[in-house]
Length: 528
Image 1 (cartoon, rainbow, N blue to C red):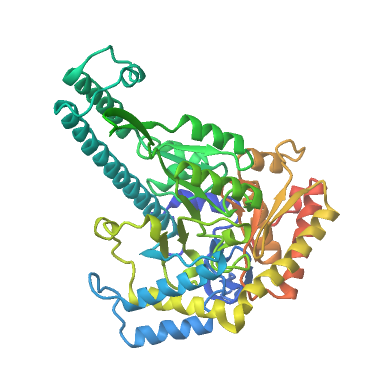
Image 2 (image 1 turned 60 degrees about the vertical axis):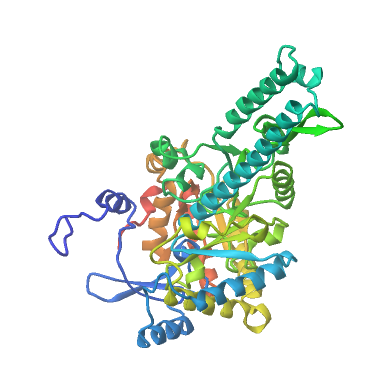
C-alpha cells in the first residue's frame, strides 16, 4: 500500500519493494543543476547530489535555464505537439546540424539521413529494422539479376549459342547431361541452393557485455541473459562476441557466410560466378558499455570491428545512446577511437533532460527511402523535442566547443578523485574505468565476505544497490550500479560538476571503502 494515499500500489510494486530494501524508494520533488530535492518527515527539502544523471541524460543538469526558456517559449507559443504527416523544417535543421558535427568528427562528408524516435531502444530497433530492410532489398536485387542471367543462359543453350561444360556440372554435383537437359539441371540446382540461403535467418552480432534496450527486438541484442532469455522465443538470435578476439570475428566471417551462384555466358560456354550471400544484418557496438560496467572500447578493437564490417558487408550500428552527446568530450565517443558507424543511435542528453527524443542516423550508402513509409513513431519529430534538441546542440557547440572541453576537464578531475580512493583501498576497489563524464567504480566481489550482509547482497545481485542506499542516506549522493555489472557504481554527473561536489564524492567513497574494509555492515545507513 502507498501510505500517503492509502491506495494499493499498482505502478510496478515489486520494483518499489526491491528499491525499499536498499533505501532507494524515495520521492524527489524538485531538481536543479546537479541537485535533486526530497523532503524529510517535517516537509523540509533535503538536497541530494545527482551522480546518476538520468543514466547519462543530463549533460546540462536538471532544468537548465536556457533549455527551460526554450521550453517555456514553445509552450507559450502553443507549438504543435501533434502535426504528423506534414512538413517539419525544424527536424530537418536538427538532422543537418547533427550531420555537420558528425562530418567534423569523422572527417567524412557523406550524409546521414535521420529517423526520429522517443527512446534509445526505439532508435536501436529502427537502425536494425532499416539494416534488415536494406539487406533484404540487396538480396532481392541480387537474386533478380541472377534469375535474369539464368534466363539468358537458358536461351543461349536452347538457341545453340552456348553449351554447359562438364566442370560446371561437376562443381554442382550433377550427373553428366547434355543440351537443354544440362542447363535445366544446372538452373534447378542453383535455384535450390540460392533459395536455401535466401530463407536463412540473418546473423546479428553484438559485443559481450553490451546493452541495447529492453524492447522486444533490442532485448535480444542485449547480452545480459536475465533480460534476454525470458523473451528468447520472440526475437532475433544474436551472436555475442568478445571485444578483444579478432579470431572469433574471422571464424564468424568464415562460417556464417554463403555463396550465391549465377550463370553467365562467356565465349559460348555457360560459366558459374559466385556472390557472397548478404548474411549479416548488423553488428551492435557501444563505444563505452554503460550497463555493462562502464567499459570503453579500445581503438584496437574498434579497428577489428571496422575491418570485419567491411569484409562481411555487415553494417556497424554504433549505440551512442549513453556515451554520446558530448559526455566523453565529443558528440560521438566512437569518433575518439576511430570507429565509424553505418548507423548511429543517439538519445538521452539529446533531449536536454526535458524532451523524450532520440534519433537513428543511417549513412547515404545504405539508406533506403522506402523505410520512411514502413516505419513511423507517433510522438517523433515533433516541434517541441526538435527545438529542445537544437538548443542542446547549440549549447554543446558554443564558444568553439567549450562544453566538450569541460566534459574532459571535469571528468579528469572526478577520475583523479576516484583513483585516489582506489589507491587508498586497493583491496576494496578493483578498477576505475570510463572517459570524460562517464565513469565507473568497480568494487571487488564480496560474495565470499565474512559479513553476512555484504555476502548476501553480492549473492543476490544487490551489492551495488546497498552501497547506493548508504551513499544516499549517509552522504546525500545519488548513484546506482550499472544494470549488468552490479559491483560497478556509475558516475555520470553533468557539466556543472564542481570541485566541492567532487570532494563530497571522494569523502563518501572513502567512507564506503572503510566500511567494506572493516566488514562493518552495521555502519551502513539505509534510511534518514
